Length: 124
Length: 272
Ligand SMILES: [Fe+2]
Image (cartoon, rainbow over all chains, first blue to last red; front, side):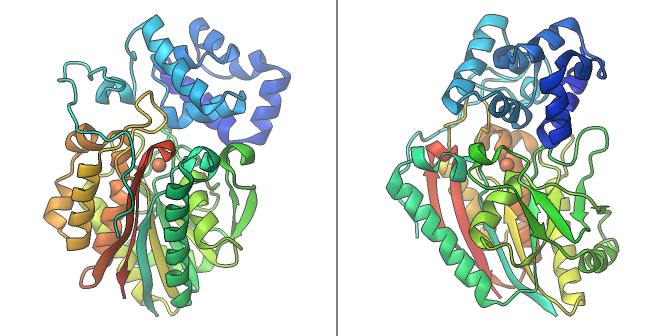
């Protein structure tokens, strides 16, 4: 389990042009600098958004990686859902604590909220 | 001289990045509300704009996460996001390190704020600036509250940070504007991305308008998440602005949930 370093790598990638160039040129060499499992390395090399979400990567970090890999927004959302269907609930990190996508947090009741899916005009 | 302006606005990346995909009428209403806010801001002739943001792992990571931080540089680069994805070109934004230093000196009297001589903007600051200072001709001072990496900054401390910002603004000769960005309900960048809880949004805005400290700081992590998603942790920025504008009348000038932007969009400011 090295979610911390998966996210740290993505944090560095997201904010640093130099890391982006290195990752494009020799991705394995860049990833070797972080304490990652083979599963995590494969997920990153394969831009496997679904697996990375399942592993617990925060969306605020993951969405930038998806953009970096030229994945459209709608596909990004779909890939996360597919990842959960394929691999199961998020393993750790903020979503394992808060829940997501109708999946409750560990040991917590399913959040029940009134949510609106469409706007209804401006309020002055 | 004083605090001359203080307001709130959203910062969701979709506002600029997915503008072409949203309901055009809703987009126009939101953009119009941002324009109104820019006119109100410009009318106060500020010397600097302090943006209290909830940044998203652009500068601060879990290797050393500050509860609060303020930028102390003469310029800032951003956004870190792909310019095409965010719909905002990468640019250099002017800062004022010496003014930051004086503000930090004063804030430190009551709040243990960190300072950062390097800071790259992400959408949390870049989206608001795109509308509020589109010519990048006003000195910007970024400030951050940890709304992303738990354990998060407690809401009552966000209120105290706002009070400290107000006091600091009143100690310096410059005219200081203040904008808190983020929220309200949203489940950003997750499979829940289009959900918006209008009812809760309006409740938070009512608390903000009333300046109801007790109600605002009662929005702890569990209740915020259950009602408003992970993005709701960002109401800390609005709580800070309420704390900074005690004694002034606050008005919400615009509220509308816009699913394509994945957030309930609210703008408002205090009559100072
Ligand atoms: Fe945000």
